[in-house]
Amino acid sequence: MNFWEYLRDFSKELNFRDDEGIFRAHRFRHTFAMRMLNHYKAPLFAVAKMLGDSEETVRNNYADYTVSTTLSAAFSAINSKQSEDTQLRKFN
Image 1 (cartoon, helix red, strand yellow):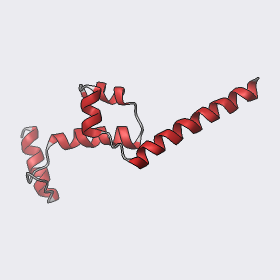
Image 2 (image 1 turned 45 degrees about the vertical axis):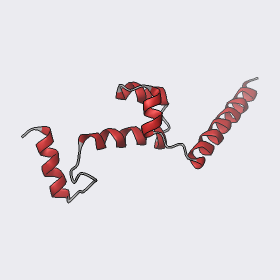
Image 3 (image 1 turned 90 degrees about the horizontal axis):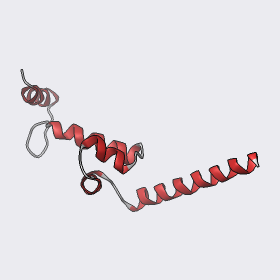
């Protein structure tokens, strides 16, 4: 059984339906990219390199730049910088 046949049978077993009615390998790629960027906050350039795509393609297709994710990333960067500054003051 080849990979595509396995996915077809697997999608039937799971009773999975998408727009085309079958579980496709691209779904794994999409899930991987979305989780790496939006959940684990992996750098865009790193995910693009892993996928073999340009950063622009990955940004347009997989990054979830909503107001909340943008603010979350900004506050995370600020907190990280403040923490770094605090650590430097402790050693000086």
